[in-house]
Structure formats: C-alpha cells, structure tokens
Image 1 (cartoon, rainbow, N blue to C red):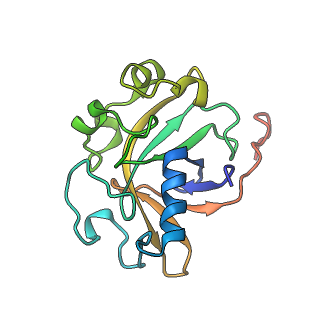
Image 2 (image 1 turned 90 degrees about the vertical axis):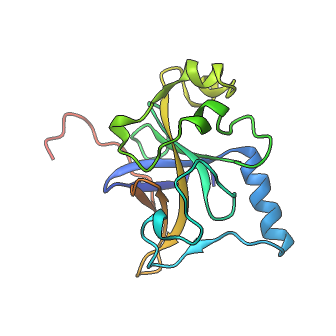
Length: 180
C-alpha cells in the first residue's frame, strides 16, 4: 500500500513511499527467486553491525537502500506531514540520489550537522518532480536504510544514524486546541 506508515523515533509518523523504479526492482526480486531482500535478525540493531558495512554512500537495493526523510509533505499518511522515500540506488531512477547527494553523504553523523535540501535544490540536482510529488514547501535529508526484526519479530526500517521506525497504523491528527 502507498499509505503505510512507520512510527519513527517514538511517535513521528512517516508515510513510507517507494519510487516506481525501486518498487519494480523489488517485484522482480520477489518473483525471480534468484536474489532475496535481506532483513537482518534482531541482533543487528545498528547498520554498523550488518555484514559488509562501510561508511560510504553505497547501497545494493537488497540489504541497504537509499532513502530520504522528507518533511512538510501535505496530506502524508500519519497526519504529521512526514514521508520516508526509498529509491533505487543502482539503476536509472529519476527519484534516486543525485551525484551531489552521493558525494556529500555522511549519514552516520547527527542530522543537525548534515545538509538538508529544499525542493528547488532537489530539482536542480535531477529530481525534477520533487515539489510536484511532495509539495512546494517540502524539504529533506538523505539516509541509507536497512530492514531488521526486533525480538518480538516486528519489522523495522532503520537509518544509518540509528533512527528507526516500525510499521504502524496511521493516526489521525488531533485538534490543536485539545489539552491532552
């Protein structure tokens, strides 16, 4: 579903959005039986503990993925205007990371010291429909991501910096005037 949400960092509801190219790639992987999507066991709670980890911008589209946290997205499922966008890293994806994003990636660092991009910058770097897809005021930060289970067998999507989210039903936004 394109309205699936993840509860990131203890209450931040992000809609999960896959680029069309990544969705097609994953469907081919699922039907071929030759390769498999890698979901790490519960003992791999940080990206740095997965096999083959290195501090780089690389992603293989099976174990590690290119992603973006995008904010100020009108009508994003979850009611908080947040989206987690995953794209194809190894292929011609018009929504994939730009060469500038790849060159300046440092996702193991804290978000406050990293480069947040606005829609105009995304579009000038090649994601030409960023604002029409996510909204005129949307902005974002790129992350590498991976999937893992927890000890209760729940599926989590985790970013390299340790932020992570578990699949969760979307919540309606409560009225701002409510005191609780």
